[in-house]
Image 1: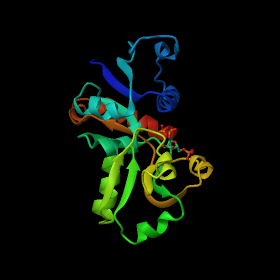
Image 2: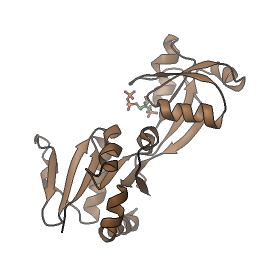
Image 3: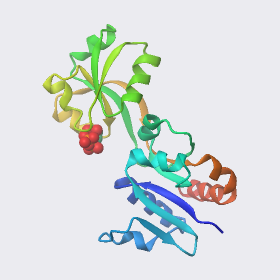
Image 4: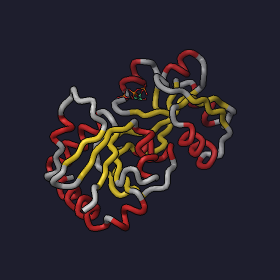
Length: 211
Ligand code: PRP
C-alpha cells in the first residue's frame, strides 16, 4: 500500500484537524511533540504521512500531487484558484468574508463610485466587485492588519475575514456587505481521487459520521 499524504494548514486548523482525525482512529503521535523540528510525520501502521504548510501553499501541494489531501480554509481555496477537488466542509473555522469599513463608506459602495479596497485576498475582492457587483474598484494588496487601511486613509473599504467581529468593533468599523461564508475544507488531488478512491471515500465517510 502506498502512503497517503496530508498537507495541513499550520496552526489552529491543523490542531482541529488532528482532533477530528483522532476521533476516527487516525492518530499521529509524532506530531504532538511541540519541540520537534521535523517537517513530515508518519503513521506506519496506517501508511499515512502528514506535513504542515502555510495556508496558501496547501492548495499548491495538493494540485501538484505532493500531497493527496489537504485541509485548508475556503478563503485560501478561492484566493489560490488551484485545480483540485473540494470534497468536504469540515465545519470548523467558520467565519465570513466581508466588505467592511466605516458606516460613512456605505454610501460610496451604493453609488458605484471608484473606491479603493484593501485586502489580503485580491482575487476574491476582484471577483466580487468586478464579476458580481460590476463595480470598478482599485484593489490594494496588504499582508495583515487589514483593518488599519480605512482608519489611516489608505482605502475606503476592506475585504477581510470576520469571525467574532471584535476587531471591527474595536476599530469603529462595520460589516457593510457579505461576500461569502467560510470554513475549513478538505481538498483532494484530482489524480489521487481516482487512484486512491477507496481509501479517500472511507475517510470522507468516517468523517461525515462524526461531524
Ligand atoms: C483575522 C482577520 C481579522 C480578524 C477577524 O486576522 O483578518 O483581522 O482575524 O477576527 P474577529 O472578527 O474575531 O475579530 P488575523 O488575526 O488572522 O491576522 P491578520 O490581521 O494579520 O490577517
